[in-house]
Image (cartoon, rainbow, N blue to C red; front, side):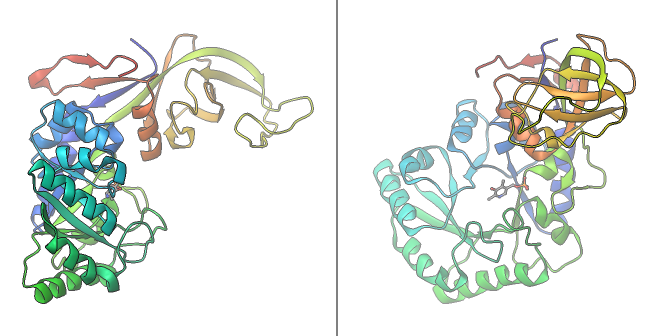
Length: 366
Ligand SMILES: *Cc1c(COP(=O)(O)O)cnc(C)c1O
């Protein structure tokens, strides 16, 4: 079969999604499934919809457009603040977008008016992780503006923690979000129907017996796709960790010393080698590299060790010689998953659940 490839087990993704949907439903929280790591795969999106996901979210309008054109039936949310240069595409293809900038919100309003559409706005609030978000003190001012603009409906507010500085969602910052909801509703005599509490890093808080306040939606990517919570990368009870497997092919297999010889400077990736003398090693080269994957996010089979990688070569040592043409399978971390899904050199092989088993190989240069 073609290599390298990422084998995608759709039944496992569906299982992960439906378990999280059920657990969060008990806390009154719905799930927006984040598809950005899948490069807008309609097969995966359809599986998420079947699992009972309420909405799909993506940070790239290109992925949302792809899902729309494939006929995926779901509400679509752009989870990154729209670029001013893309507002028309956003209003045309996304139902809702997460926003922080009045200039963008005004542009969304004018386009929505011209198109005769209503676009949903969720205002993101800064609660300490220092990525996107309106400072709480400035929130009312932006709410006033959204409420006054035609073509827009204020759906609610949200926040994003952990991604930039690892700030942990806890009782303090999360109750601040609920307090802000209450105060906006009281000040403006409105009801906010969407309170978007955060990403997969918010799961521990949401399922940990805390008062979840007004939070009624989470945006989940990694937890669904890889079965881990991202604060400590702990496996989530009952979820599959291996919905995605990277398979790559051995192109060189030789016994070589562990220590390089000759004068040494920087390698291709700008690093200096730290190789130690461990005698001769059974080494192999696997035909994949930094261009296709983040090698630090690869988990090799038990008897294989990753020694290093350049753009196109992944060097490993193995307990026994690996035959030329044989294949090695790796589990993926989130960064590695994003990279393999984005590489045109890595084929995407969908393993459909038994009720619809066929093999779809996405051709190169999608
Ligand atoms: C990527 C992203 C998510 C999903 O994050 P996971 O950790 O994969 O769950 C949620 N919200 C925003 C704004 C994002 O950019």
